[in-house]
Length: 461
Image (cartoon, rainbow, N blue to C red; front, side, top):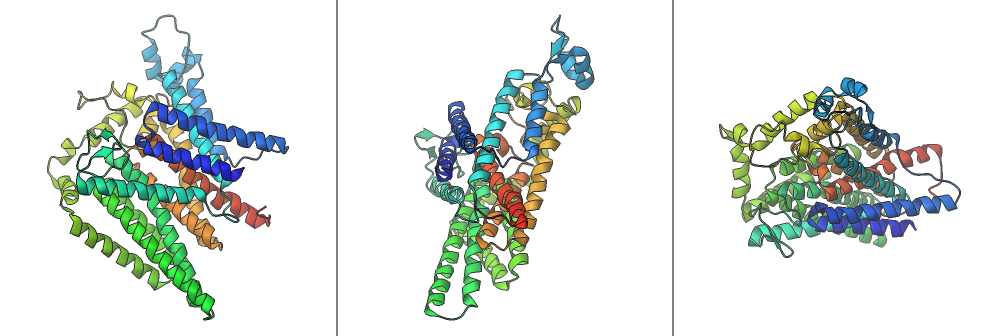
């Protein structure tokens, strides 16, 4: 049963990613139906066994309750105290006595359903990821999917064949985007996969070290040779993924990837304390730099050089959007304008590029603060940062080598998206948000549930 759930969940991730990142309504609707159906199957199976035990922490439930409160009608007198701008909007509708906090209930309902789908993916990933007994198919599929996206993007960049299957791209015509429309969202996908390939290399390195210092028998020699080959293979895959990231020309993606790999390398060194590991990672960065330079880094460097232009702050649209979004947040500081309402409400605050429709804030933290206020944003992000810290401690203390390597990958994938969210909106892209939810689910399982079971001495069965 668990294996079937894992396979179907993995296929939904692949399908959503391949279908332009799941940004089309029909695509994500199918993803929602799949994860809700799987969740229902798990509940039915547990009900038949007489006990419902879902790996679901309290914090997503609190966020859902908060959004439900945004949708709940309240007297206009109460509404005026909770959200004066919302009451001012209602002043144009005579006879209104009850109304919801959200400016547009329909959009908030849609946003809530999306979030419930992400919670379902989180729970399913945590439910099937018993890494004390089995290898993770979800992680294997994520790595394979990332490699396909990387190869696709490299072909786009080197050949100029700027298509996504039969669709001819209209934007980012000189960058690698894989099956995504936007290079930054392509980079967001890759930066969640790269840590798992690095973690696989770390696992192979540990095997090589262990067999290197073991008794020298024919069997040990073969195991050592196999581990060395695996290490080289994963380092090659890591190089391929990072080169694809460079060719995306996403400045935030490239910087986040470098910072994430550097952090994971240092964290892994704290665990193994082997000079060979650090030397290997330094050599890896050197190989990537040489190869990327040989292929051609001119267009990539040109994007970074733009940041030194005197008028860059004015030209770069993000800064203006952030400034206007802050004004929106000031009007809806505690409860927000309603989950999923940013595109509609922002129009009242937009001061630049008026010929364009701004659908996202290009900063997930600001967008969630605008939609759900400081209370909602805190309910969402503080537990994620807490889980990240728990994963780091779990990695440092875990003696199970495979599970430890998967934890390292979860740390990297989580950290990368949290950093990239400062300058983009990957959490608003359904396929990337779904992958992020799965990574958090696996991380929650290994860092909290499994550690509690280990401490209590429970059997993995």
